[in-house]
Length: 152
Image: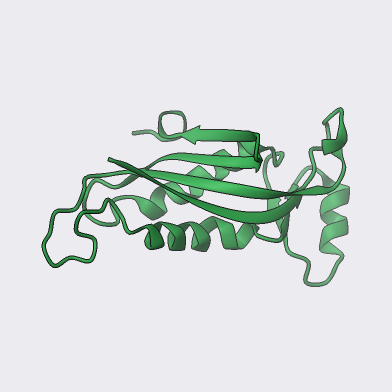
């Protein structure tokens, strides 16, 4: 069985080598969808009876490991030195420095890598992360899939 939880957050970024508007500092209302697979829990008296995982727990884990860190932050590429230095010169500015260009594709893969271990078999029901879908806009998204990201 597969389940999906959607969370939203706001963040800024720039794609320095882009030929169009994305080379400028700008922001998005991102949406992050987390898809998990696992067996449906069949245990009378358990609060998770009939579920793969409680959606509130899916949300709590995604928030704790990705969303809260990225929300209202500027996601900056380490090699974009002038931007990183500028952002770090502002006291208390929330900057997340990444080892890769913060494209939707890279952000989806980074989120997948972060969340994979956080969800793994949390309920003892073969639970595992299958997909992270990151919407950069309502019409543009990237999917990071288990078969493309993990060793198993």
